[in-house]
Image 1: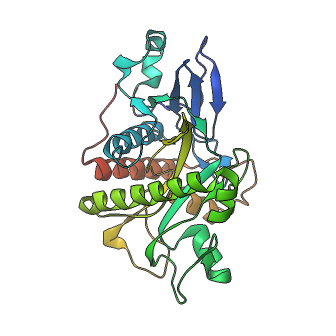
Image 2: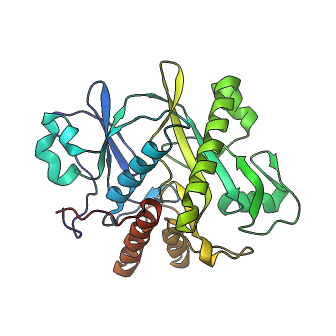
Length: 301
């Protein structure tokens, strides 16, 4: 696939589609699932009409990188991104799927997003200004926007595929999925965040916050969906980090900032993105991949 080609949606005749998310299409392969990351981008719970070239490949390959690297901390659903290992029935779709698709284990999803925050940004900053807390976690007085927190905090949210996820307290999460499972997910999520943050010292990237999703496999909690991507995380450039204001990042916050600047009211339909914004977004995602993995995204023809 050339750089100019994008994938906005896809059907695979004869292969049932289990789910169509904001970015990923999920196909049922029997014992496994096929995750296909499109080039769609969502902001403020709305899918934008303009695809971002290379985005799906970046999300898939970064997730694969982290699933391999962090599997000693928590089990995950990753099987393969090597298209030669994909079922024979998918080979005719290789041009469109290679590099942006992942074979994964089939799990029973847990309806909670596990958010870990190391810095005070986004909705956490807004909530802190109101009551000095974030999802029930009390924070020290006098913190500024983008300040590093004394230690990473766990701030879960109830998943909502059709709208905005709802922030909840740890106690509310425990009431939903059980105290034992909630404690496991909190420990695993903070462990993943801390290991990834240490791993990115060489890349001069700060992980302001990130979210993880999990599922059940034979009663065990298993990491699933995506992992530490520019869609699920705020990646800040450490060399440009200055507390007390918003930060420059390598993630989709750039798009959110543009949409706010353009005056969009966050209600559908979302506006088209101009070419320079699309190009800049692609560049940010490719830069995130290069700095995280240490290599440029492989060229695919």
